[in-house]
Image: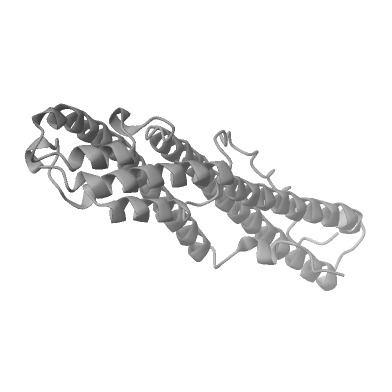
Length: 254
């Protein structure tokens, strides 16, 4: 019997997927809702700038610029897709399971040899098997750790999607801003200098518009920050692991 190192302990199981809440609107629904909100806000904000400054609840600036709202809508399309991130995490865990299974099968096939095979050649094979086992242990751990990062990113971006959808819904596109349609706002603005009765409805319109804009832009800003953070964490993890672990975790194609 060889005195070489015995085969490594069995590989640990790949960690089970963590709870990832992917509830929320699908991509198409989210973007449709965002586009509708952007359309309403941009249309009304273009008129808001004609309002006497003393009737506004907030000063003019970037957050009352239609271009800011349109940019927020465009950035919504850059938010990572939570379901795609969760699918990548699942693929990584499946790859870890495959690596483990291949290692276990190999260990079982070679197991009987250690009781009958001795000598320098047996020692060399045992050392090689042990080295492969250590590599497999490392790869399973790397795959599991990377899957964790993708799962966290999926959960965070799913929450960001729900937040963004809520901000867009708060614009209430089907509900006229301040009870006024754009044409009605135009008619009131045309009488600003001659009719004091337009002040009250225009003030109410401006207050409603400013609140809807605030809610949408705040949600858009939060979701963008979450998306950027998730992307950064994924890139950081992949860079630390030398790239996509899936590219070297699966057996070669026949």
